[in-house]
Amino acid sequence: MNKPFSTAVLDWFVSHGRHDLPWQQQVTPYRVWVSEIMLQQTQVSTVIPYFERFMQHYPDLAALACAPTDEVLHLWTGLGYYARARNLHASAKIIHTELGGEFPDSVDTLCLLPGIGRSTAGAIMALGMGKHASILDGNVKRVLCRYHAVDGWPEQSSTLKQLWQIAEAATPAHRTGEYTQAMMDLGATVCTRSKPACSSCPLKKSCIAFNQNRVSEFPQRKPVRKIPVRQVHMLMCLDTLSGSRQVLLEKRPATGIWGSLWSFPECTDMSAAEEFCAQRPGFASESAQIWKSLRHTFSHFHLEITPVQLSVDASRCGIMDSARWLWYPLDQSVPVGLAAPVKKLLQQLAI
Image (cartoon, rainbow, N blue to C red; front, side, top):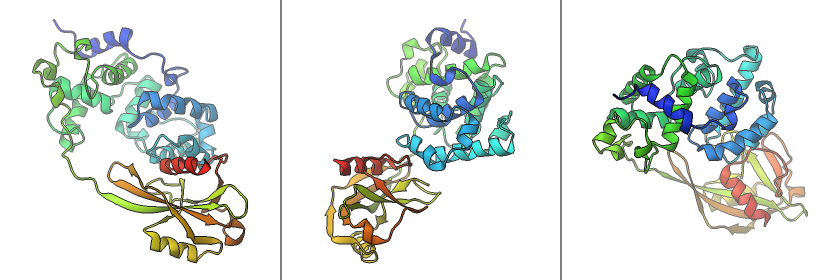
């Protein structure tokens, strides 16, 4: 007779689950929360060094709440999806100043904080507080979709509602934290997106997709739509005339892509770039060197970037370091948050 779902998962976890991840040591709601936010759409192997550096700088919630935004974004540089970092910082401030430094102790109240959804709240409760709550991250969705042969794209409202009902029914009242970690591990290491190791799965005897030889059909995919392409010229205004090795950066608005990060000034085309230079003493548009374009892909569009290198005399242009502008050293010695393609271009400029 097959074991009940949760029992089979928990038994597998004892011998095959992951027990030595950094956030599984010295467990607190804060450490679990930071790890869960970092793990959203990011692999464990990528997250580990970022998590360890983050904990060195901000070992507890109070340290994060009191940190400068630029410093937080600097530590996040390279992880992508920067709204996660901004929301993490905002929530830390709320918990620290308005909630006495104590995490809310229910899923509903946790979900009132910026950047915390139902699944993340469940993970904080189960893993960080040892309380009964369910999760439904990407790994768990994949396991449940295959086990129950759930039709529909998992993010579609009706399918998502069905998956939450299944997840909550399957979550045991006891050993909830172990079960939660076990489901994450099962999806990450066995029931993987491609080439799942079904022969090693503790659920294979009862898995509908496996027994019907339909594993590759689940989870069902999002309907395909063409991703639009946007064009932008990034002006790399290099201060070569005053003898300094620095380049002009502009702080992006708090909302939108790369919110609150530092990036190069942007223009729609070369005519706009020439106008940008004409309005500023010391900017030489005739020195423009157009680099090979590069593409950066977001979830909903491709950004086609044309880098334009310009020679600038910073001593004449009148632009001073401020909340909006920054003369940034090419050795990247100033800790600020940088958009990933900007960091890449800075490295090339420094050569």
